[in-house]
Every structure is written in C-alpha cells, then in structure tokens.
Image (cartoon, rainbow, N blue to C red; front, side, top):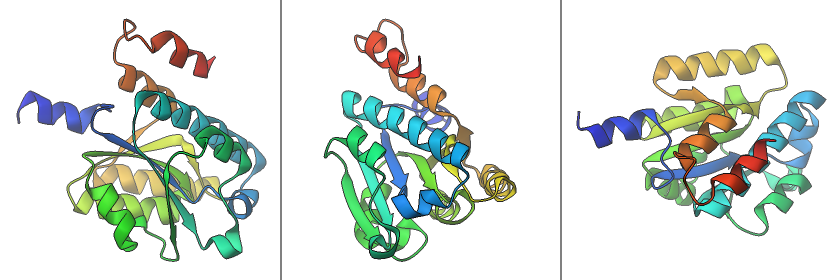
Length: 190
C-alpha cells in the first residue's frame, strides 16, 4: 500500500476529513446521562471550532427534528451558522441520499453523535462498506446506557472503524507544533 494511502487509513488528515455531527439534538441529548451529555457537547464543540478554523467541511444530521428538536444551543453557537444540515428519519445518515453523497465524497469521516450503538453505528458500518475511512470519536459519542455505547464501539472497531478521541483528532489535524494555527487551536483543550 502506498504511504499516502496508509496515512489516510491510519491518521486524521485535515485535507481529507469531514466532521459529521449525528443527531446532537436537544431532546435526544436530554435523554442521555448528564455527564455524558456535557462531555459530548464540550468535545464536539472543540472539534467544530477546530474544523471551522482549518476549513474542514462539517455535516450535521438531525433525526426527525419535529420530534427531537434542533441541534443543541451549545453546538449551534460553536457552529456559528456553518455546516450543512440534513434531516432524516432513517437511523443511518447514509439512508438520506443527499447526505450520503456528501459523506461518500470524503476520504475520511470523523463521527460524533448520538446514539453510539444506533445511528452512529449504522452510519459508520455503511460508510465502511463504501470504502470510506471512519474515525469514531469515543469521547464525542454517547448512548443512554454506557454498556450499549461500549458495545457499539467494540462492534465498530471489529468492523474496521478507528476509535479515537477528540484530542487525537485535533492534534492529527494540526500535525506539527509549527503549524501557524497550533497555538490558537491547542487552547481549545486547556
């Protein structure tokens, strides 16, 4: 395998990434344990801010927004009006043709969202079937039950997804402390 293809499989590269927020909506996140909700919002917001500053495309899915509401206020503030929003009723983002086209146009998909064992898992599995490199940000996904989250992540790892964390993604996007944006973006995790 050529070195460039290997790097695209193993390491997040900001020139090939798309950040995807799956169903991080008010009513859905309200059903999550409070600590998990806060962690997912905080870490997703950090990734959003980094993606915006680095010019990484952001895709946002909303599961049945009429019933589950909009993306949380915290994340809307982080988005600052950026990102492409797609509404869906299917659990996988790939079942929405317009969103699927955007996701499969990328080489690397960075997934955050709810619930880890349902919508995140179904989306990741379909993207993996399409040959897309999928990174699931473990500290930016949640489920109502920690056991189900763990099960979803283990299943995805076995299927070939890369399970990572938000700090690893951020520093892989930067790659070098000499990057002109390093000082500003490294402040996000302090």
